[in-house]
Image 1 (tube, rainbow, N blue to C red):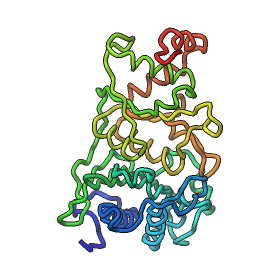
Image 2 (cartoon, one colour):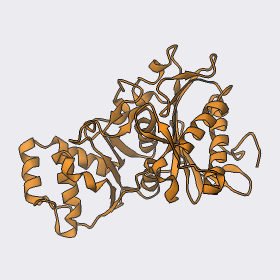
Image 3 (cartoon, one colour):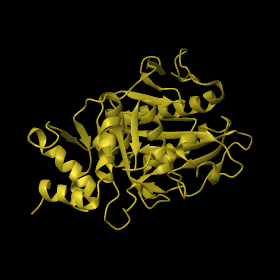
Image 4 (spheres, rainbow, N blue to C red):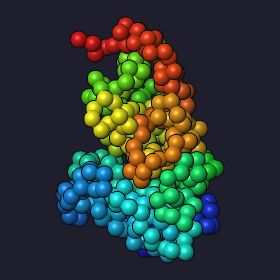
Length: 335
């Protein structure tokens, strides 16, 4: 259980990325054990401050960030950009790589025993730290997440499909279970926070109204709505059985560009989704073609089964008067 290499011998990891991937795996394995102990391991959900973006930091957020930054030293990662830090840190001056990470995604769910995770993205290092990350997402060379749930799993892509690993509690190794995971196109599930319905742009409301109309509506089938409030958990469900996730920009102050960060969350998830034959957009534009204007830039995010993402885009492509007519005719929440 103390192996420095946390992967089974058949793990097809590129040689130049192996030191960084092994560091990520070691910390992920340790976090899995700590999370599994819950309150026996301390007050993991205690609020300890605010991060660089103004979000409440939990004790486990800080622990995870410090653990990854420490373990990645000497792994070839020159620049380390964390959602929990305001600026980029240089941890290996000679390293050729830049790594962006959300050390503990979904931390608001720690005390509820809902699956949480770690999201990471690897790029080529630039001479300037911030410039290494302020690039389009299609320049990523690897992306993935670790999900801490009933099973601890890691899903990762190196640009040639999605590899699916499970942490074997008997051996302490991430063991490959699928080397070419793909997203189903047939799911009838979608995930969105319906409490914000009144704030959404009309194309999103029209799309959701059509889903909620069920078999009697224009989609002619019944849909199920999901919302976990953990991006890793939502992504894992979609990669496992298809469906659609939406976090649009909306009319609330500060939410015009949504809530999710492009560098730490959306770009790596978008790379995974596309490598699993899904699509990922902001509603109209491919996420991997967008260039963040700051380390903590946000973007609306729509991803999942390709046909479903494309259908959302079709609602945005309609002339405004047509979308307004659809919403007026089908708005299920009209007063």
